Image 1 (cartoon, helix red, strand yellow):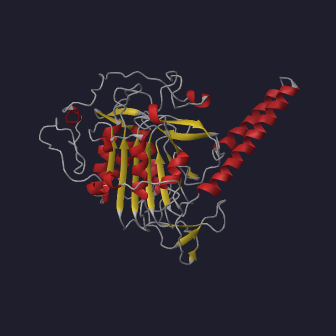
Image 2: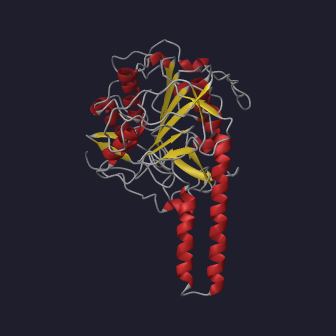
Image 3: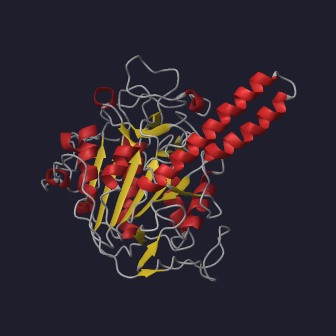
Length: 445
């Protein structure tokens, strides 16, 4: 892996926020958001010149349905209709799907031949049938794994924010690399992809807030059991105050469209409402977020450790440690101060537990939604330079891990991605799911 260069993360640079701007980085995350100079990078052209991506080793615009700038010699604009032109216009919240489940089977148990977190064993395909949630979800909730044998659709978004403060360099490359990998290794077709990047001249292909929301609706429209949907976002991410009480740390995660200064950000609540809530059981949505503060960017309530275990809420652990610290501090401080600290920490822990329970009840889904994110909610994700190419560290690690071993379980893949980044990146990619996941099953798309 080559050395790290460039901006320190896919989040708004701390200390550079202007009054009235629509993003907010809370104080507790600023310590995790280092500011690093654009070392060795000349200002990017707006739009990029015709030779930039070829010089970086990128294929020239491989998206046959998108109209490209005529300045790229040898690649005349294509006339095929863009899938985005067929997007439906939605009003209000999507209605839930009425799913009539087959008989319930027991939750799948790890096979003796299944892999462990260390990478041993052979991953097995997902079992058919419907399974009960457990793990704190209502008893009536059921879920179903997707066999990924049906329709395939993908939405890929890469935003470099040309000409804006905090401009990035690798996001468009991430989308090109990811789309090429989906076609080559997972059987996706270009005509079934919507790609939004801010180097395109066609207004409908720009990653504006309106276009992103419309594309999200398109992605999940008419989804059926065993379909395989894929979502990839590479760009800036951040946090804003949680207003509905379902966040353990008190903050919603957000992504930033190219026009966020005019239209605002997109919250995890909204992305969950559009892309997760309407999906029926047995539909797979695989989401990759290469952005800062993205650990729970889709509000999926089941988050897994590198050992394949469901994580307890971080805030509860932090509050418990805080109680011990407060008791220790009480030996050398006044009693009233210690008491106030105890009361505050107890309230904080109780609030976090309530938020976690609310998330289990409101964000659990019968669909098969799996997300790999570039970092924890409190961390940044690196905009890197690897092998002389600008790229998001998470997007690069995901593809590289699968290239080395396409037949991995979920927990193997999480550990493989982290291994790829262990040479110089502090971010910790996360795995989360809409239902309790047997992490020793084979990762399929």
